[in-house]
Image 1 (cartoon, helix red, strand yellow):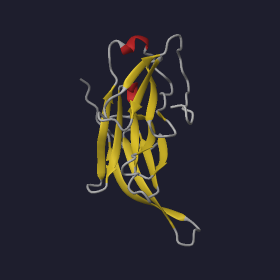
Image 2 (cartoon, one colour; image 1 turned 90 degrees about the vertical axis):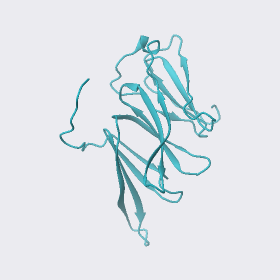
Image 3 (cartoon, rainbow, N blue to C red; image 1 turned 90 degrees about the horizontal axis):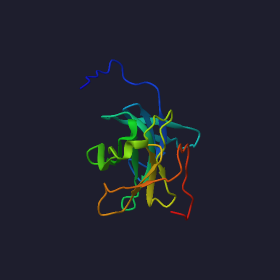
Image 4 (cartoon, one colour; image 1 turned 120 degrees about the vertical axis):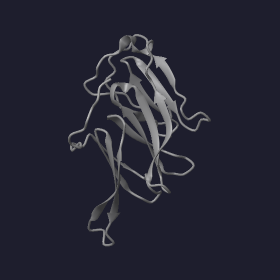
Length: 181
């Protein structure tokens, strides 16, 4: 086991994302700095001549975030965050608990499997998590040639499906087209 002690908090922003995270009418800015999420609310001035950022909260995570996206919860109409963690081992879906002012894990997906790692390579830029335009599912490439599909609105929120891409390797980018999910 390795013991790691953080000597300085992270300062560089790895990701930024706009979302309706804390309320349906709230315009939030989410900054990710390694293993820290900073949550801001953007408040426009009445005269529409500017805006200000109000810091809402800071969340420290148990892992370095390497991919992020958002998906809208169909029941609450609030956005949830899909977080991919370093080494592609784990994907977590979280939402903001407006009563407790903290993150709540909706689902956690462990993608570590001896059989899956047969084609593992280190990507200089980890693969993104892509959400389809209708918020039905999200996809992520893992271990060079496997596609993981994370369906939403299922009775089992931590369910995912893995497909092997035959004769396709080194996928650099991918997207979901409207109406084809």
